[in-house]
Image 1 (cartoon, rainbow, N blue to C red):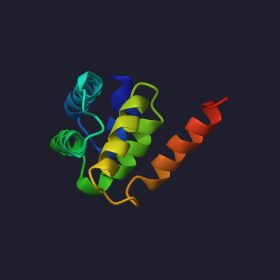
Image 2 (spheres, one colour; image 1 turned 90 degrees about the vertical axis):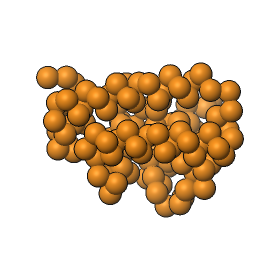
Image 3 (spheres, rainbow, N blue to C red; image 1 turned 60 degrees about the vertical axis):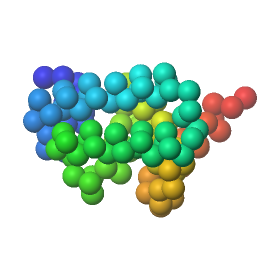
Image 4 (tube, helix red, strand yellow; image 1 turned 120 degrees about the horizontal axis):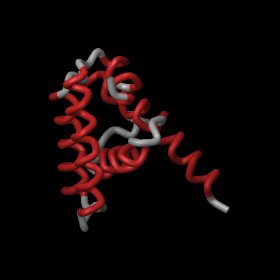
Length: 116
């Protein structure tokens, strides 16, 4: 049983297979984001967030659980970076600022604490 399944999959009622597929997909999304040159464009942001949402819903996460998933992933050392890509992409694509507000605040607090 993987750590990801224990820490994330079980919280959202995923099977071990769904959890493994989700984790592989999340790793691919991080690689895709890092390789992209236009990450600040609205088109890229929209497509990136759509890929994220499609990945999670295909792997058993309900649309109503996406915000909670993003919050859980933020507290995972292995997936925190992905969240720092997903949330700004969602906002840059025109998403509702109320969505992910708690996680975004945590991100901003962490950035301020890391600043000298």
